Amino acid sequence: MTSSIDRRYLLRVSGALGILGTAAPFALQLAAAGSAAGDSAPDYKALVCVFLYGGNDGHNTVLATDSDSFGRYFAARNTGADPIALMPVGTAATPVGQTSGVTGRVATQRTPEAWGGVLPITPATAQAVPAGTNATSRTFGLHPFLAPMKTLFDQKRVAILANVGTLIQPTTKAQYVAKSVSIPANLFSHNDQQSTWQADAIEGAQLGWGGRMGDMLANMNGTSTLFTAVSVSGNAVFLSGQSVIQYQLSTGAAPAVAITGAQGGSLFGSSVAPSKVKDLITDTALASNFASDYAGIVSRSIGATSTVNAAFTQPIVTGVAAPSTYTNPITGNAETNTLALQMQTVARMIAAGQTLGVKRQVFFVSLGGFDTHDTQNTTQPNLLAKLAHAFAYFDTALSNVGGLDRRAQVTTFTASDFSRSFTTNGDGTDHAWGSHHFIMGGAVKGGDIYGQYPTIGVDLAGFSNPDATGNATIPTVSVDQYAATLGNWFGVSPAALDLIFPNLKNFGVRNLGFV
Image 1 (cartoon, rainbow, N blue to C red):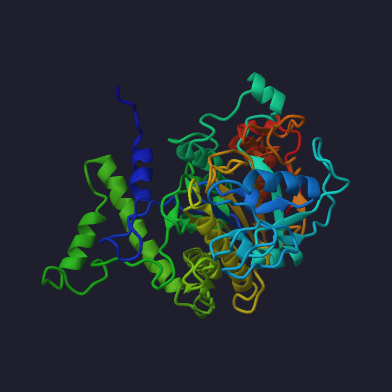
Image 2: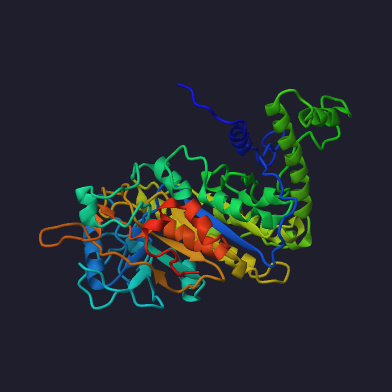
């Protein structure tokens, strides 16, 4: 069976595969047509999605540390061949080779005993104590290698959104068990949940909510709509819109995008060949509509590349400092942080915004490797160290862009497939559901935890967790609510948000208030 695919969609898909840097002859990147009568905008705003591919373990990222919650946590995770339970707040790091007074095990650099206790944080607003938690108040902490994130939280520059995940409607444990409500399809599938987070639909979705927000506000970018949705991490459905198509950039080194041959002085030994090839591939006077449209897109892409590269030579852009190395907490070595390099490119693009004439931009960066079925103790700590280092770098970079503090104009947020199972499988964790995420920016009401942090623990004799089924915590905040709150700040109208998120109407709270 064949399906009908329109010419515009085929062009979108082919252009999304545009090359980066010097990897191929031409940067064939799809562009939305510029709005000839673009509205003027008095300000600039950017959303930056940091996607953690593989499903980050939220239980070891943001922890409830009151004695009842931590006791259940520690009992569940301090088991197996390679226990993954973090040490309690205030626990001194056990020197490598010595025996921990908490666990009775010999510490190595790759075990939690050597890392010291969970880092305490104090939310500005006291969290309600949920049913099933035996505590008079709740306290919280972060993974030991999230120290830069703790600093940002304490400075009220970062907020935490608790227990968010893909939902169609509010769902309780009883409803989930009874199958009396609709739930997202393929809950524990990486590809489907990555797509549902980014596009509100399983794998195969064509439109992402970042791109759809770009659609709604692209006219604010005048004739520069090509730069509305920008990926520094390859093709992502998150940035695919109906008219706005993601523009892909390479990371780190200049130029931003390089086209080999088209701007060269010779090709196949001929000095005129480059211009002749360019004429051929940009010729729109063709009988085939597809070929004519494709040539037009190539022509715009070549022009856009020149525009971006020229903008990236401006002092305000070159003045964005490169990130420092970070210390891999497992090896102790100083290493390059690939996520921070992506954030540098985003910061440079933001700095170039005035030259490019853009007022609204959506960015996508990512960090992979969070599928920690095995060896979680050597994998997640290093990834979280990268995340925290990149956030701290980006905050600093935006604090002085050409002498201006741009942090209030940029909101950065994390997303991931799902969280991990509450119990360990021996040396790792498996696929689960609700998780906790970070939001950073000058407009963010930081230093607080939004949403209800759930009760901790799996069902045991005498204890039934109302917030979890099996090993999976049921989200109490939907991705739609999370995204709509960001969209409201970005300037997307309530009516447009309803179009982008059809399930938003099912939730009583549309704005979570963190920005």
